[in-house]
Length: 281
Image (cartoon, rainbow, N blue to C red; front, side, top):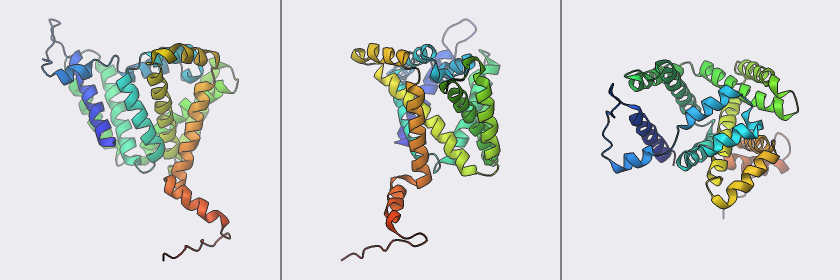
């Protein structure tokens, strides 16, 4: 499932980049001869840009229905499906795939940063791809520091939304973001696994909840009611996201469903002793 999802994601990114490759006269420099590529390119705005705009506006956008609704309505159903798949995978298997996750985040961050610097300059896509490869490779041997950085950013995002959700002044949400960033960065020095789990559950839960809501909003009979619910209950999305984070953290700490079942089997055994396993007949 992960292989097919990443393949689809790569195809979508390439298709969207091809749409932006134009020559100095404004004519498209890439021939969309393939009908499949043309179909993939019709997926609306890239979610990375939508998320970046929302985060620039405010880090606690999960607690602000107007910003959140605008973001969700602009996510194409294809991207919503990818969000759901990647989010679910990250929430459940984040620790097991920690190296891939951190390297992928570093590559995406490098690609986004290079595209912002290059703008619409000629060869911007090639430069962005090159920077993505460089940042991904650099993050590999410096896994602890890269995890601390991305974990800190995830902590800042969570801290800003928690700050607003608990009734503090929304205009001061950056205080919660700073607390979350510093706390998680310091935690990375002594509890690497906890930081990885925090990073993957926060990112995964956000993607999973947003992808699910965006997919539901494509159903006409549910759209108006769901938008009204989001507008009338500002804490709905933060609570859903928090619930997914807790479930994901428990599953990762416990070693998945198998690990949780093993822990449950040990509940009746005396402390310090393993339960006696029944012999197969």
